[in-house]
Image 1 (cartoon, rainbow, N blue to C red):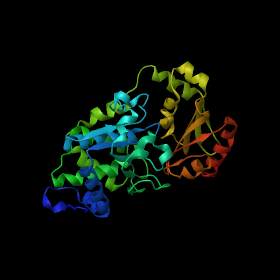
Image 2: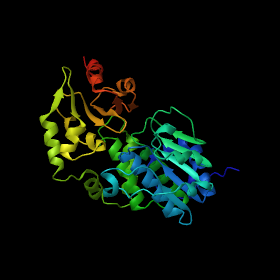
Image 3: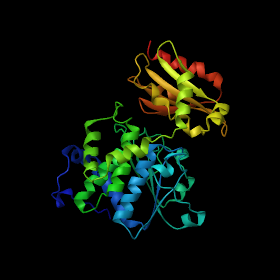
Image 4: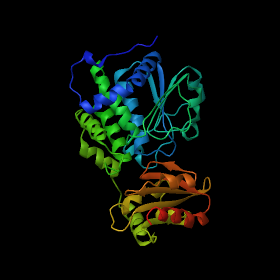
Length: 342
């Protein structure tokens, strides 16, 4: 039987914008909380090659679960990030197949389809929940809360955990800081059009937990002196198309020379975000494992996710990703982006 909770139990003041969103989400929130209560073993999943939102949402939710249900076994799985781990987020749990043999609840965040989930053992979950802000392309969970209007998956999860404070649950500094980092990362530090009054309302509530906001930003965007060499290379080897599409290319030899990995190739893509005359920008990084060329796309105003879908990708209006099977496809990618700004 589904048990429901009334948020009027506690008169704690919460931003009305957050509470208004709760009215829409409440049926999902009730089912999610019921599932959490039923299972003693919980695994939080997210997408491969994680970004701030994937890791921030995953760690924020997992930390909340551990804080409020200390008797439950809560795990986080997936590939570690080449620089965010352990600088910003803890190292992922390493679990053998035997651990997944017993019933567990699988909660998937910030990913729209099964193939992009960082650990395929999500398929063994007795009960699956998905919380995401990408367009839903595949239904694989019993409970699927998807809201594409939100800047980050962390924004949705944060809304849920903030409202649950009225039920007596705690939202610790650590959990709030992780969620805040996810929102900051996927909103482009609140610069993308997906940022809304709800985004700021949620962040206001998260800040009330008391975490050090300066410390969060310092950990997220800290650079090493060697990173300046990468920036210097890009500033000396970028291209700009006729309609203001800026891009740079990092092949395997350059990556080796600069001592960076493929995953780090896109770290400097936003160097071009506030330059007059540049309307969109991209990083193109060779990946020898697949093999392919990984593309990270950004835009000031125009939606570029439509172009991303032409090249086996997708994403948000102003922040998307795709891939090129060969560098010979690069002129066509730039041409398609150019068309947006004619």
